[in-house]
Image (cartoon, rainbow over all chains, first blue to last red; front, side, top):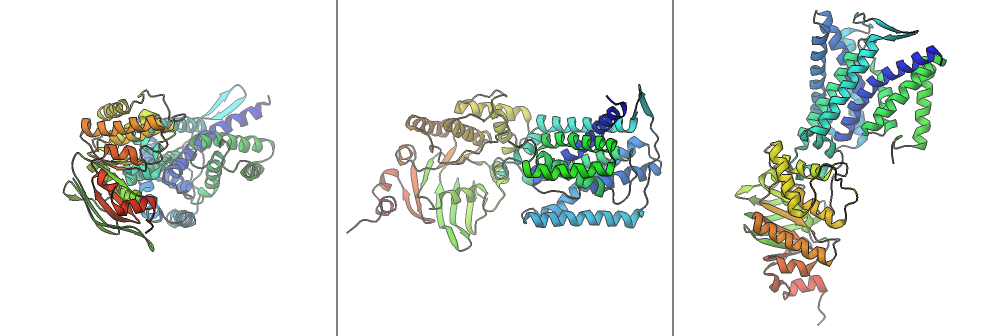
Amino acid sequence: MDIYLLEAVINGLLLGGVLALLALGLNLIFGVIDVVWIAYADLVMCGMYAVYWLHVAGWPLWAASLAAIAGVAVLGVLVHVLIIAPVLRAPPINQLLATGGLLFFLQSFTTLLFGTDFRNIGVRLPIIEMGDIFISFARLLAFGFALVGAVALYVFLKRTYLGVAIRAISQDREIMGLMGVDQRRIYLVTSLIGGALAGLGGCLLVLQYDVHPFLGNTFGPLIFMICVLGGLGNMIGGFVASFIISQIISIGGYYYSTEWAYVLAFTLFIVLMFIRPRGILAR
Amino acid sequence: MLSVSGLTKRFGGFLAVNQVSFEVREGEILGLIGPNGSGKSTTFNLIAGALRPTAGSIRFKGGEIGGLSAHRICRNGIARTFQIPRPFRKLSLIENVTLAAYFGNGSSDRVEARRHAEEALALVGLPADPHTMTDGLGAAALKKLELARALATRPTLLLADESLGGLDASEMERAADLLESIRTRMRITIIWVEHIMGVLMRVVDRVIVLDHGEKIFEGLPRDAAHDPRVTEVYLGQRRT
């Protein structure tokens, strides 16, 4: 196998880990609350800014990351309370417009605060050399933490009663109340977890990309496409779709260019929506 | 135990429940019957908190519960089953029931919740192993699961919605016996909505008949069979 192609495949795999983490967060929120947070990637951008500014202020990277995760988790709760909860029973188009409004608000507000400069955290992590293959340690680190985040979410959903309730509420909302489950509490916990995953995603991406107010425009459509491709609300489907899309982007980028790879990925997405509109794993 | 007074529910221009009043005594099994669209399920939904009353009062153990959210009513000790079972298909049997045991009583004790869930499953005769899923369960087993889930919340009042629907004759008798034993062994008061009159009339202490959202009869089962309004509702208007 071409050594550069192998490198592209490995890079695609590593990118897929982070995308999978973000897709899990968005799918969790959609599956439980039944509202698509169009602005999810912009929460990731907020997390990146939080790590960046705290690190610039002298915080160690780990402390800045923990604070960013906690901050974006709280932001997730605020988004639910202030924007989602009031439109919970509204038609889907109203919900979409409300979260779309949030997207523009976050982009405008961060532009107002920080300008449109591309900011780099300046943490230089080594490049690992394996034979003739070079792998970025930052990507490897991001992949590892993304997997840890995904496994932690799996254990929480599988092993705790709150997690079981979160899985159950996506199957039948009405009956949960009649079993004594406070739906509002489940929604708040879900928003908190979804926010925390976006925060973790921000911590991992800030090691690889410059942060700017419009970063969500790159990752937002990608995460949304992955979730739809996997079947909205289907976490396993989203996980699988993340790696398919990341490989298309990475291998497509190797053979042609990154721009062409994105065109290819979105074309495939449109085609698959005709063939499997409910997602690649839909029965 | 439960006092319903002037209960009314309006959906736009349609009056689903109109000024219905009745009392439920501790330890009894009360039958709530009536033809389709008579307001039985709406009355259940109002008591359980799935719907908010347009007017009227629902008092349970002395406190007003009308308009409270469903989870608070459940934690107050009222559980309900559904005519068409609604299990969580992606969860195992024990997870279905433990969820109700954990949240339904507000105790949040994992070990206790698991024990209550196992007891509820044993009572209805379903396995409590963690690998049995709801797929492939027959109508009778799904009804049992529905009942186990309600019992796991440790209610003092059970709203049983058509527990006999979809069962064969012998399963119906066993289901009715189960409801009777729940009343005697667990001291749970029951309001039972049912269409299968023969079995219901054998088990209930009193019966209330609804028609077009209004109460038209309240009394002993044997008297209901001879009441002209009830006969008219079930058999059609008599020709003179």
